[in-house]
Image (cartoon, rainbow, N blue to C red):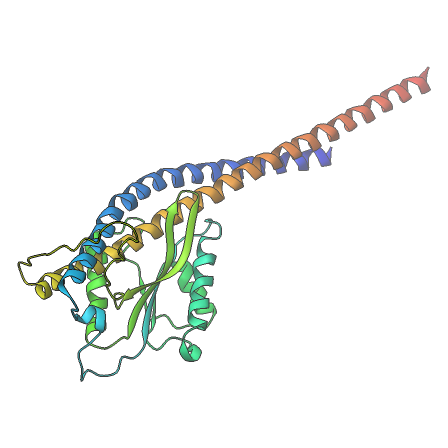
Length: 299
């Protein structure tokens, strides 16, 4: 009897866990749908802006800009690279945080001199990343808590402007972002993106077949002034796309993890139910045997 009561308690506990994981899966699915719509809506703008800047820079010739070449001559030597790490505030999202932090540590170990912590500092979004860095004795320069599950463009643009100011004044040599890039609902890839300096903009390669196309542009305002407004907007849009990719990747990782937990809880409940039925059947058989034996002894 004691064994059947214990199994019933386990069945109830597993059923409660399955109910919780099922609810979390549904919530993550709902958030994933909204986050995916936001991420896919901003991606064409970001890619189109990059294509426009690349085409204009190729047509205007060799242009120099602080966001590409760094601070002007005579500025103090930069302190080092600044790294921003995007992780989640909550767990139960499978290997999401571990993959990002593993990629981050590989990047830090490959840095010249293997500086720990990096000279430019490490900034983090999410409690999971902050806890990991503290455990590994890597000082966190600043922890951002203003973004949440729905980062606004204004908040991200303000952070991008701050990074551009640090880079153009020579306070940091580069700005990199460790995050999870969203490729599709079934594929996400952790990477360390170079936000600043912007990679040198080169003309696109001419196809091997077909006549070469040489387009001529008239710039109004002049090309340096035009790129001077487009390049900062490119940095802001890129960082906003990074945040959107990180959010949607977190939701899809939690959705998959909770679905796996729900399925496993369902399988465990079936196993416990089978064990309960067997134990109950054995108990009934024992009771019948005792009754028959007692009746035979009396007769």
